[in-house]
Image (tube, rainbow, N blue to C red; front, side, top):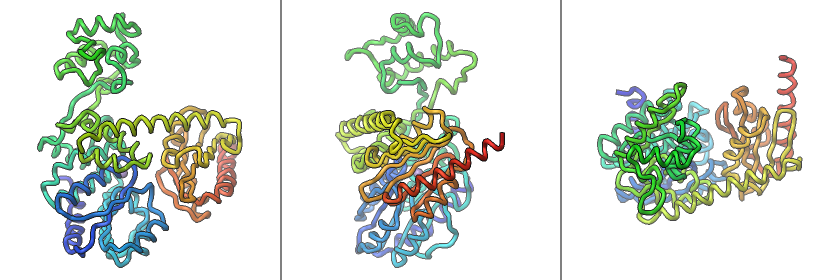
Length: 467
Ligand SMILES: [Mn+2]
């Protein structure tokens, strides 16, 4: 048995005891995070509440703020569940929701040790700082399973959350994630398939993927369309189907196996078998996009960031006919990313939007980039240009500016770097050493940039002195 799992189950037992003794005259108030893990967590809770005939009211938020907690405190509910968030705001939750029953199902860092006795925290960080062992959806799943063993069918959503939070290590899930995966597989709620890990495998025709792949090299095949078609035919795979060119996912299991074997025979010596294959986590009896846990995680993320979390929740529950809407959201999300990147490029010579300093870039997008995707944009930009530190800023509709910070190399502790200036401006900050962020009032953008520049300029000088 897993020790961390035992410790979590103990905490869950106490939380469930309190939950079962709650004021049942009012609905349960659920608040979850807007990323894939948060939406998967919400999906798990929604399904479990429906199953238990418990009324609930759900809100998905980008982060917890003082204002939002104050609003919650004025609502007429008595039981609150926070999933995939809450640990960072325990102090404020203690202050605002002191007369409520509060359950926090989370895996983020816990900055304080003492908090209100009305708060039941379930978080692996109470016992271990191993990030890859379990996701927010995983913690939420353990909770609902202990509430009612029929909820074991929600194990697949715990895996969706883990994939959304990129918890695979060298292509495998570990720790409690692995135990949940085994539980899902053993009970028929998930299947693991080996899949080719080639660029474009889910979006391009099979023969094009093989022809253009840089991970394999086959004489006469790589770079040649006719050579690739011949190669596929020789191993007994028709690249054409009834509806035209086929995609990898349209192959039968036998065809996939044959293709993988043939490609592995031709793999370059410096490539590992792991470089060519990855695990696909399949949720059986679902249409394609809802049935591949990795794709579903990507789709949930897009839903959350575009303010369409309800489509994501429906997708988690496998609601019939939701695929089309989901595909549309993914397309819209991709377009938003492209438009945002273009905006940054177009404003490279406009210092009031893109400030280029010595070794750093500050993107002040204001309303031109969604605050929910500025983190993703800053990450992409940080891989494209040669600067050391990147800061992205974008406004939300409530008068706040979301700040994201990224770096080229793992040189600095970014969370510590932005903590001080953000707190000085009355904002909130979080994240970790390699990627961090925060939230400030939009009217403080200019002061923040000034403070940040002072800090960044100093870092550059210090580095020069090191040399
Ligand atoms: Mn999470």
